[in-house]
Length: 219
Image (cartoon, rainbow, N blue to C red; front, side):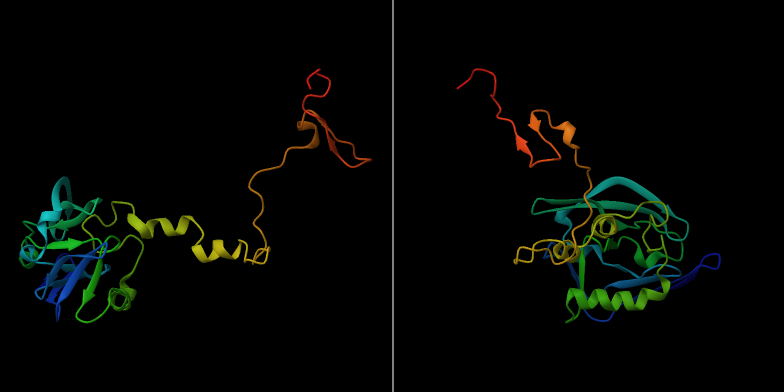
């Protein structure tokens, strides 16, 4: 399928080989009839036949979005092994003219699922996908039906807000009693000497701390 909407080229072709979708290590879909949709300015998206997806773990939600090039998208929540991800899967059940090949098929948010193509591992598949889409990667452009209208979700959205594990480890005890890197600056200020009532502190001699019951008559 090749379609052009207002100078916005979209192509859709069958992916060679068998593709598997994994959720928390469990197979959710396996198919040798996967269509890869490529849209200008977006990452490629895989669409799976509904009959090749474990629909027992999916539940349709009320969320609906509209793409000017593909039509109205509906969403599904996945529930498996006590893991629930809302609106993690989408489908164009009645797409616009020219997009009929993806009608009823399901696509999966990559931050919640892993893909394996043929004999490749999930990490190798991800690396290959990234290499093919590198030129098309732009902020807010990800090929999703809600691209440009919704904030980033899931694991990838959190990584820029906290230091990585390796960075944290470098600032902790290496086992020798010393940090592997200089300690971070304190994020709170220490109270001054006068704030410690009951402490007998003098700058001209070593500090001593008054006994807690001194002068009260207690034993």
